Image (cartoon, rainbow, N blue to C red):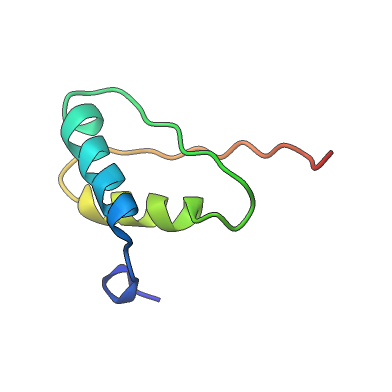
Length: 66
């Protein structure tokens, strides 16, 4: 599904804006973590689509369930 078709709740929109303004443009990193199916991948897709003129990289760390 294209990111343009996703519903972006206000909290997610605000988070993405803060990351774009405060962290990525000035250099640095952001850590996105949470429970399974909480929307981490969607947020990463939104940030990647918004960062077309920045150099970005993503990494994933998996922890086995307890």
